[in-house]
Picture 1: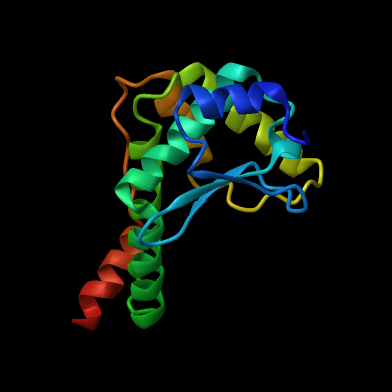
Picture 2: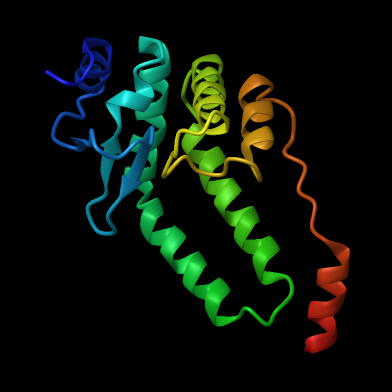
Length: 171
């Protein structure tokens, strides 16, 4: 099989065998896709460097996206941002919402394992491996890792005040 044993063990441990698709020709870690019945797409080549605990944490995270139908929510946010692009605060609100969805999906996972997997995938991306579906690298990666390492620390939300003032000026 092209799928490493530790990845299949994580899939089986979580009961996700019927919800996971393996894609060998597209590097990308893992992502959730589909609007009505979301599924998980996994790239064994990207996850091969992860430990069994990290694979389990990634799959738990993606399973939470499936249950919450987050791909549909992400689509709605993207459509709203495109429709109301002229409202200066829309891009900040969209980023805040995406980060909140990621943080919600992180809940309940082994924080150390998930943070380790995110760091490994981020390192692969920096080394030139094209990773599709690795949500929020850059913008919310630091926030996610901080929350995973220190779950009691409140998430500091910062909005660009200039955009808020400009948005109020439009209305």
